Length: 331
Ligand code: NAI
Image 1 (tube, rainbow, N blue to C red):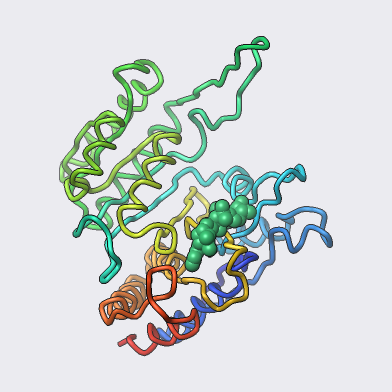
Image 2: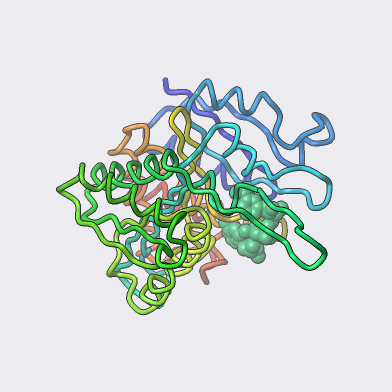
């Protein structure tokens, strides 16, 4: 039986994790979950929100499903998410954004996959106070990281029957750094003649995304643009409650929703498990359980088509009622 690490999270984490486990079990797939606690709940006992046992478990099992964890403010702890990405070298951040039936949005037929470089750019943390009135942040772009993220985007596109990979930069201004990213994209693209290519500047992309997002397929971006654009595309398809995500490296992958631990609705049986469920769907595809992934996604879409929704999307179902509705749609 396949063993997978489950980070239960805190806040609404355990509620939505339980919902997702129930749905996966009902789909007929047996998984041996290696359940690991992390986040603010373990700090008192273990002195850190991300104990070494969690990292060891992911290294051993290679794949993890992660519910959201709270980052304590002002206590000197690094975000669990940032730490996980660094420790496990999860270089690709993947965010598929697709319309759901009966989830009101401005546009129909949005189906965009954002592939964001996760390790460098302005997020390298190299900053200095030059003098009292001047601060400096360094943008690092390397050939190695750019080649591997572009290759990842093209491979993903091929494996998932997409048609086009579009690179997003500001290479007209940052001629060296974004220029290098663009060069790497062009070099990698030569190996994928079956896929269309497109180059666009990030400002133009943003304008076009809010005018007609159906024109885009797979986007590959350096870290900062990827961070911003992936929130924009999540907003196009219904926002936090439905936005799935994954952080993927060479050895390991961690699948998680975009949203946080929502402490305001903790324990109220109101949380929407959709984003974690869709992250689990991506995880199942990643471990080649494509049929089960499709079966679960179909059941979820059917549930939305029946206009069964949780409170955040204007519905009236509790977490458990919504979960049971999805299970009854599994065929
Ligand atoms: P949040 O995403 O937890 O909540 C923002 C708003 O969206 C709240 O009103 C919440 O009730 C609602 N919401 C979020 N997810 C929902 C869901 N599944 N169903 C229904 N409503 C939902 O963002 P916030 O409040 O800024 O952060 C809370 C904590 O989560 C912070 O400690 C933050 O650091 C952490 N966080 C963790 C992340 C992770 O583990 N990947 C990602 C983002 C934030």
